[in-house]
Structures are given as structure tokens and as C-alpha cells.
Length: 454
Image 1 (cartoon, rainbow, N blue to C red):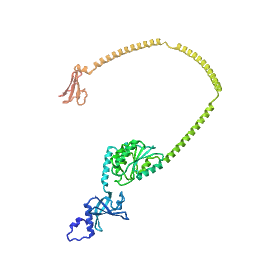
Image 2 (cartoon, rainbow, N blue to C red):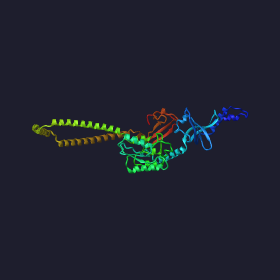
Image 3 (tube, helix red, strand yellow):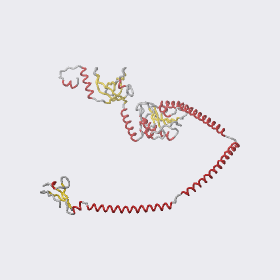
Image 4 (cartoon, rainbow, N blue to C red):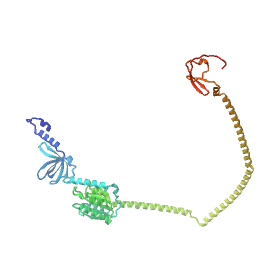
């Protein structure tokens, strides 16, 4: 039954308590949206099912709360008695007992929402300025000559980092730049230590770290002054703040982020055992290469020794070679003389058989002149023939016939010349061609007449 159905019933209607409680619960859930409520935790209980039951109160009132296991398992912390918290909840009613309660969907410490909003605003501002740009990030040195640590001397994170560095790289000196990591004005002191490390130039890489904590505990590393100092550092900076799920502004400004301080120490330190192992491998490779080179040199020396002969034997071989060259030179001289004689004979024969170019040129000129004269005579004959044919054609031209007074009748329908009188018909249009033009005529009457004379 809904609140609307309750309104439609009369004043004497009787309803069960469960129906009334369900109607009230439905009305509350519809009337109150999800809302953040702040208060102090009291009577906190974790049931065997995983659900949380507690109350939040202030100086004037309190409200029972329930957070089911599906939501509670994602909470970042477990509330304790007396904690100041904020819950995001839906106002509802526990129908079996008729008790008003808050169905909690999320929980956070008081003030955490405002801190997170401030975190997002500063992150967006610095990101817009380019402080987090990838091109600003510098590569970490593979073999640093010194490692700097900016943290508190009393921090457990310092002991973890020093232990890791001593295990992985005991040969690398470590310099600690002490500064508090929690409290008012601490960010400026951490930034001053980062600047001091850059000014002193004692190390090649810098670790800025601290252990885990709440967002309030880690807020020092969300301050703008520290983020700018890290971004402007000439030394590569590794941020190792909190646990793996904790993110701070310093993580985004640093050149590399490590999930924990121990991971930061592993990130900047080469592992000594691996370096020694690689050194042994390279030493063995150099030794093998040197041994193979010595073997090749020894083999080359043996080959050169076999080629080495005494000066007397070398002179004797050169004398024999010289006599061979002299013999080949003498034989070559005879071949040259024979070739010269053969060339002289060929040249004599060629001169005897060489034609007289001058006489042949004169003969060619006479032939060319005869061809030119024959061509001219032929052209003249062709011109005379063309003139004669043109005169004959002019005599046979239809135009000459028309000029003598004749006319040609053309049928305009067929386009043919009219040759016989019987082809003419009255009222039939004709075209008359005359010497000086043509005219369209219409035959009025036809009287055929046969006559041999015109």
C-alpha cells in the first residue's frame, strides 16, 4: 500500500502496522534524496555478516545507521568510537521495528570532502600550467653516484628506505635531508630541503617520501609550494608517499611515482648483486674475446713465418724472374717489328686501291646537273599538258554552255535535271539555272513539241 492509496481510504479505514511502516518508508525514500550527514560515531558494531551498525550524533540529536557489507567492503577506513565522520545516506525506516535509520552508501572522515575538492582544484590548476606534462619528466640515472632522501628522521619510511638501499646498493652513498612530514608549515620546509639538495649537488637523484596515513596526514604533500619545488628541481625526483592507493600532488609533479617508500628505494637503486653478476658475465666475455684474438694472431704469425724466406733465395728468384722478363721483352721486340712491316704493306696496298675522290665528286656534280635539267624539262611538259587539259575542260564546262544562252531545269522535288518534255507537269515547281544565277518557276501549261532544231 502506498501513501496515495492511504489518502483515498476513508477515515474509518483500518490498516496493519506493517503496511503503515512500509508506506512511511516509501514516503521517506521518495522525499529525501541521498544526502551527506556529519556526526560522531557511537555504538559501532561489525556483524558476522559483514554489515556495520552504528549511530552518529551531535550535541542535540542522534540517528541510527546501517552500512551493508556490499558497501562497507569498499570503505577506506573502519570508523571507531568517537570518530568525526560524514556519511552519504538515504533516509529510510527499519520496518520490523518501526525505527528511523540512515542507509549508508559511503563514509569519509569529517572535512575529507573539502580536502578532496581542494586537491582536485590544485591538481587542475597545476596541470593547466603544464607542471605534470610528460615532456617535463626526466629519466632516472641508471647508476647514481649518490641518493638523497627528503623525509623525517623519525619516520618509519626512512628506515625502510635505508634498509632497502643497504641491501640493493651498499656502494652508493646516501644523504638524508631531514624535514618534518606532518603539521603546519611543513610543506615549505620540505620544499626548502628539495632546493637545498639541488644547491649542494651531493646526489644524482632525490627521494621524497613518508609512510601511509589519512588524507589529513598526507595533506603536506598536496601543497602547491612543495609541488612547484619538485617540478623545478634540477635533480630527478621520485615520490614515494603513503600506500599504493594514495595519490598526492607531489606524485604528479615528480619525475616518477612509487607506490611505497620501499618501492621508491628500489626504483632509484641498482641491485648490487645483479651488477656484480653482469660484471662477471662481461669479464668472461672479454676474456673469451681476448683469447680468440690471441689465437688468431698466433695463427697469422705462423702463416707469416712460413712465407718468410732468406734474402739470398729471394734474390735468386728475382734474378730468374728478371731473365724471364728479358726473354719476353726480346720476343715482344720481334713481334713489334713484324707488326710494323705488315702495317707498311697494308698501307701500301690501301694507297694503291684508294679511289680518286676529286674525279668522282666532279662526276657526281655533272649527274646532279643533268638530273636538275631533266626535272625542269619534265615540269615544263607537265605544265603545258595541264594548260591544254584546262582549256579543254573550260570548253566543256556547263557554265560556258549557260553563257551561250542555254538554261538547265531542275526538279525541286527530286533534284534531277529535266531532259524530256513528257516529264514536265503543269503546276509543278522547277528551278531554272542560268548563266548568272537561278530562279524558281511554276509551269502553267505544257505543250510537248518534237523538233530537231533548237
